[in-house]
Image 1 (cartoon, rainbow, N blue to C red):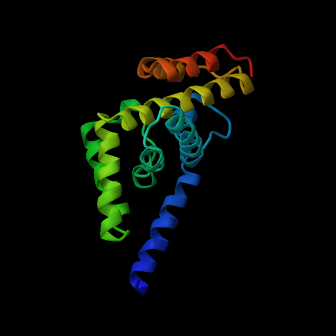
Image 2 (cartoon, rainbow, N blue to C red):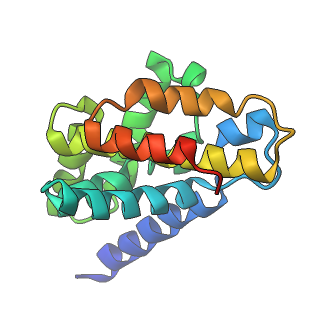
Length: 183
């Protein structure tokens, strides 16, 4: 790799690292004190994907890559709430992932863009699993905030959102355990 390619790679890593400073806007909206960052959410989603892909015989590499890429555009667009997800916002998110991935060597840009698009289309077993696990992570975080800050209003909507999206029996069992837990 030449100097400019290395510089681009460092810029990609720097930009990806900015997710550590992007707060999850839904938690901000309901008044969570010191809400998690998008990177925090992405990390635990990736952990879920690592474990569940092995338990469900999914392509672990692909699910981990989807988990790590799924919110990467938020470095540029910010974390959007569901009501902010308009067609215009979708176009900006598409442009943002292409902008970020353009810093990588072409073969990686093409591979990761294909994986990101697979996640967005949500047709494969891996993409559907990552979508459900991302919501499962959100439900677990909601329960943790609910326990830590019982006075916060509106946390229940995150749990209801996860309940609507999660359909696979294995992940529904995990969701039930989370919802029934006092931890």
